Image 1 (cartoon, rainbow, N blue to C red):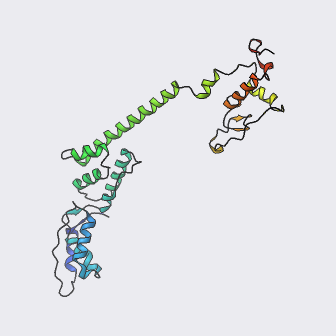
Image 2: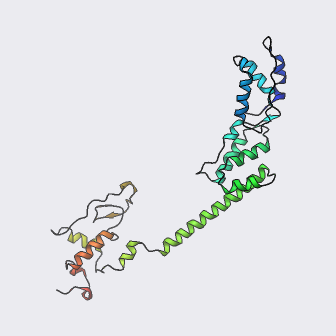
Image 3: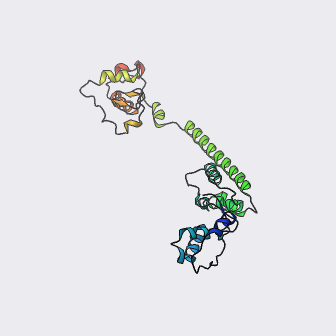
Length: 256
């Protein structure tokens, strides 16, 4: 809806043939600095005797507007909690661009009120003295850069922490017995033994597994046989039972 001004309807109002006995009610003019819904309800209650005359209701309504009335959809623009400040500014600018001759003071207020009162930008905007809409945008841009810098630092710290912290599998590698052949080759030779026990099927979501890798011990995708922690643990148990001596170095073979 574009802006409405009283002057744009002057000629049309003069052509209206008002009903007999019609007297122009006294209205409190709407200046665009309050809730438009409240003004509309006030107007309808004042013109209740003529509510069936749509033409008259529409034309007289224009006389209740003083200057330019901001498009009411601007009041409904609020920042979504999942939305970034940069996206909120972009959305607000797009909606404001639809308004012809908008009131800057009202636009500045609605831009601020679209933020949560708990947002740090809201506090700076409400305490700022005579901030223009352009100045509000500039302040929002600084907050957007600040948020992005904090997120970047957070991601970098997380990355460094992961690099410093070894995984459980990598930590466990240091305690496993070393063999003369890959453990996937040992599996191929031992899995047909009567005492060999295969693990139960994996219960994880198959759609999220890495299908470029295959584990012969679990008989499914997700990781390699040589990198399977469960197979390494079971193989260690078989080694302690003396079932893998042929794959050990002479220095690490268990005594008979």
